[in-house]
Image (cartoon, rainbow, N blue to C red):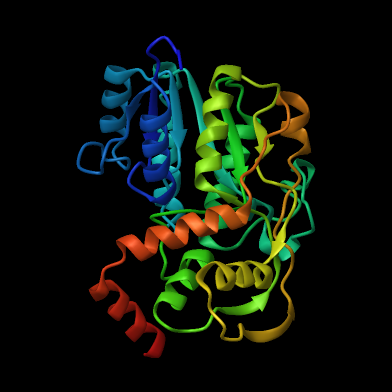
Length: 295
């Protein structure tokens, strides 16, 4: 793949999404990939960010860093990069469906619903404030790409639904969910593939897009896929009856502009993820996880 030796800076490159994106770009493209660790770049230090960007001058910045416990830190990490927009080409901020506010969720939310209700949770509020800044910015080199559910290797199996239930089965426990709901999931490798296709097309007509399938799937159905893939016979444990509000978006605005995207079948990717944990989860980690389920 030819890209004239362009460079991509991945902010948050040691987190779940960033780590996967780094690997995807390194293995599937000829982009020069920068993914500094916290020791190499303190995102909370504005002068450090200024110095780093002015010296590296990346063609693209993919910003996936967030502090789920602090709105202040999340904003600092974003603005310390965003404010140096003269030192890079295009910025892709990885946003979240949480920006729409969980109290106001509707099926297949589109971009027009942004700002109707302001999130009150730490994560959602931070993502909302960043998205609002980008939406009102006069800069043409930044977009907010709003993700909904995303899964893949290296995710936190203590709390992420798909990885958690794969590990539950490995530990001999049933698939479990608190309450069923429809969820719009993509695999992290599809995000990588899409971004590789997207970068040469930037800038786009807008700076605010959903990136999702528009075809949500129920958590129970996902649980059944996990059972099938791992040949487990126990009944699924659903702790509460009924359904939580659907968490899904409409990708129509994005795909009508740049064309449709073919997402991987979720079953295929669950098979890959199950194989990953079977091969990489140590017995010590599995026993620790088993104890946490029983504790």
